[in-house]
Length: 150
Image (cartoon, rainbow, N blue to C red; front, top):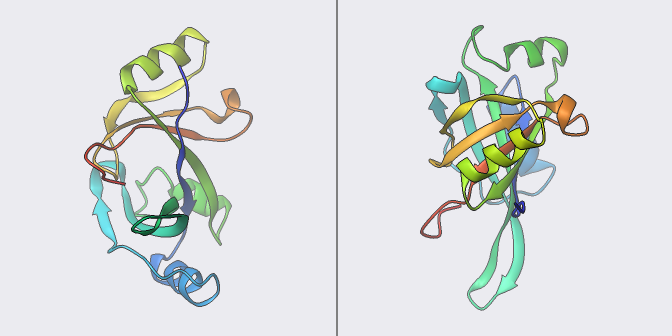
């Protein structure tokens, strides 16, 4: 199994509004998507695009920044924010061609999968691998979006 491209870096934040202002005003981001609630995962999400390579139709989208704000105290990232009040890097997400093949591969290596595959913020199947088994980094594995979706 081979990992695909780095799709996004998840940044936990206590305030999407403040984080969006930071990426716009300090980092110069020009393309920020509309925030949306993902209640089944207990978070509010907003993607910030970074520029990719210049193609024939202009620059492509590079790695995205996924800003995630807890939707209340039952959110899985509520504890992360409690320990890191300013927020911070939460996870990294890599694409794979087949989510079930990837899950079987990681399990075959003895890696701890955190839950069954489910639909993530990009509308494609995802799962997480415990940071203890991934060099200290919570790692999201995501099936590559179809039909040119990012």
